Image 1 (cartoon, rainbow, N blue to C red):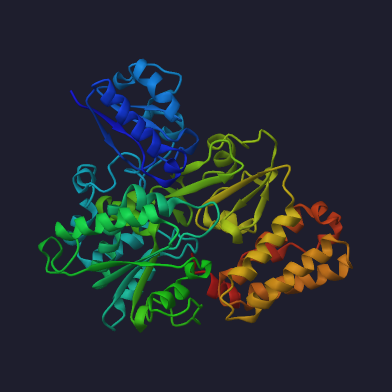
Image 2: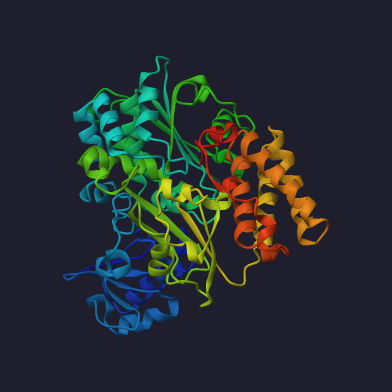
Length: 538
């Protein structure tokens, strides 16, 4: 009897030796004349145990990990093909507490299926959402997405239903659907995991969006640093075309939707939606003035729906199960589930999908196990390089859009980076300004010049060169960047700088009363001129 083994092809697992493990298992099985079939699945996101090998048994898929090539012979000696005990034995994968306690809707198939097998995708519920969307009709699809309360998972948190309705009601033709897969925020990898581990769900979500708004052409704007994702997407797109899920006559409806991949060239600013449109159109990625918003005048001047990978990948379960089903998860105006990505100095890094409203402490300490170094947690950055820093005493904040904003932060793309008590927060604040200076598109002065001067001013403060006077300059610079920048790169860079100053003044050689001016400056407002432009972001 053939035994099926699952070994991830996800780039995180590959970086930890999954390819070598797969080849070693293949050779070991052949030498023992054992009949095995290796399926290269996606990762379940439990990176502390990657490469994780799963064996299909009558009792379920038994997991072992982290497996190194040197462990393979002993696994065979222990009869792991029958799910027997071994020091790397983790039990039935779905019963591992780290996974079992999650609520996986968007990532239900991640780590379960062969990512590029259409049959496997359909056997696990794939394309049900598209078929249901065809039955509902365009207007009702937009209604269900609106009812679900889904807000953009790329960082802005803008209501997806409103965006789709705006594009659907726009009279101009043709219309476009664009997926922002330029996942450049530090500590984020959920988009990559979908594209590498369940690419068909992204295609399904984009196709539903196209049918809902009347678009006929779509683009996936993929960062060039994701070659594994590109290979999976290319194969999935070709398969979807050959089976009638893309092309001129989608499932016999007479509706057309063409889909292509466009590669970025490593510019962080192209994660901003209008800079991304400029890049797709063949120009240098620079931020556009808004209004008009892309839903009215976007790609090639036509109505364009732009969402990130996780947003599109969440749509199929909404159309399949209904908006109310999704809305039952979450809190307040933050509905549904969201994938949090835990990285940095974390003992158990990985992807955790759960309802919005879970506390940051639960993510960092319960799922993450605290720091990998075993030292105390000193700071946690939420929301990527533009996100604020939280102290360990602040970790009881609920992880939803409003609660995080109320504590002076942004939820962003759901990235969480942990630091222990050896971190130099002055250095981290300087890095935020330097990052902005390097990645600025240069179109607006507050971002281009403010970040460069900000780096210099932080150096002056740390080196005790007129610290009080330079604090005044830094405050004014941050104010100008926050309210005068065209997009979130300049508009949100003050958050990590000011939060580091507020909570860790000693790292700058300052006393707490030196930074009393920081308070309201850490409150995120959607009414400020710069933030209005910044809010629809990565």
